[in-house]
Amino acid sequence: MASNNKSSVPRPVSRGGIGLTGRPPSGIRPPSANTRVTTSVPPGTARPGSRSGPIGTGGVLSSQIKVADRPVTQQGLSGMKTGMKGPQRQILDKSYYLGLLRSKISELTTEINKLQKEIEMYNQENSVYLSYEKRAETLAVEIKEFQGQLADYNMLVDKLNTNTEMEEVMNDYNMLKAQNDRETQSMDIIFTERQAKEKQIRSVEEEIEQEKQAADGIIKNMSPEKQVKYIEMKTTNEKLLQELDTLQQQLDSLNMKKESLETEIAHSQVKQEAVLLHEKLYELESHRQQMIAEDKSMGSPMEEREKLLKQVKEDNQEIASMERQLTDIKEKINQFNDEIRQLDMDLEEHQ
Image (cartoon, rainbow, N blue to C red; front, side, top):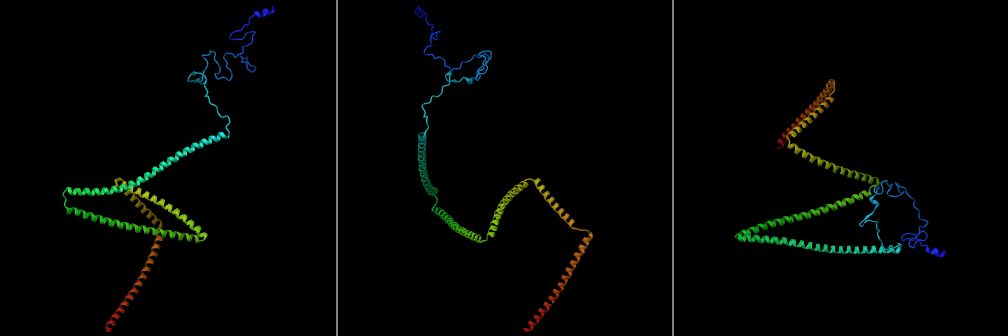
């Protein structure tokens, strides 16, 4: 009876769920013990740590949704597809780096070979260009010669076409020949003068070098104190030369400025009158300064009187001394005249 009752009761098993008294199907595993059971969340609050934040009371439509939270791809709103990589080397050991180094070295060698080939090609092109350039120079000289000959032939044809007589042609020829001879002589003179100048320059340079060597020898033979003094004087000389150069530059700039101002003044009557007034003002100021200096140098009337008396006495003494010298000179002149007359008389008696 018991077995019949037990077999007659069917098991309530559904397709998608688990029966009340039966075991779960093999395709669905029971939740593990480590699975965290989620607690119920009251409406209006969000799970801590979520991106969406608090959910409003309006439901799903009133919730704040960010576009960055839902990745969009070409296929629409779906999950991001990660790039599938092939199998990689798990351990980067010495052999891996050696292989990488060999690959880089091979790339460098191929690049170096390529650059060397380009360099060789450029060198060949350069050598060919130089040869062509030399050939072009020689051809240019030949072209100039042929152009001169062509000009001569054209002139001869013109003479023949114009029925020019032979005497005129010969006269022109002689005239051109004489002119060429004069020019060749002048060129020879210039060439000889150039050689002489170059020889003179070389001799002067040799003399300068000898003088430098002699000066170096003298400096070496000097005492240490004199050498130090010489070095100091040399440095001062260099400084003075630099200052001279700067001052010369300033002088040149001032001269240029002066010339420009003079040109401006020459084109303006008002500026010319202003320059004349400035010159007169400068003369008057200099005269005023001179008069002030004379006034300062002058003393009181008594001092001036004594000064004048002293000057008069000195002048009188000089005049008296000059008169005495004059009388002495006159006496000597008379004496010399007497001697001359006596010599003349003696000469006449002797004759």
